[in-house]
Image 1 (cartoon, rainbow, N blue to C red):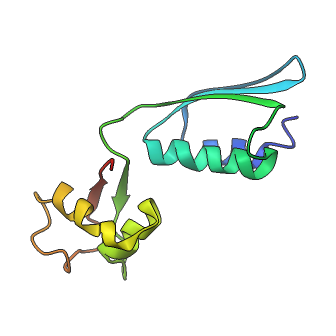
Image 2 (cartoon, rainbow, N blue to C red):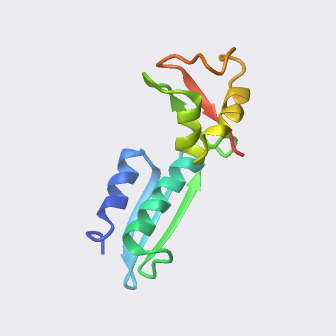
Image 3 (cartoon, rainbow, N blue to C red):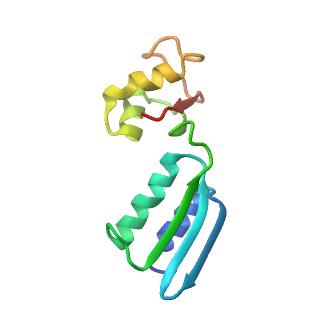
Length: 124
């Protein structure tokens, strides 16, 4: 069972999921842990669904979220724009205004962001 969901376990390790626990019980794989943000929890669930289908019957996962006040945190990389970042997290580049407003303490112009800046990606 663990072999089937190895990509999920690897992603959990990469995301540094806290209080992680994985065990096989009654023919099911049980996964518990705490993701930093809702976005990271969503990434794990996307991987679970990719492997086990929309409603996997051989896996039970209880993933909590440490910080529910934000959707994610993002470190700006060279060549990124707020629109590109909004598309990554929300699937819609026009939601960049929400990111701009949430980061008014460090951003003065939505067209000017710099590599290395830590942005809050707000819940919508």
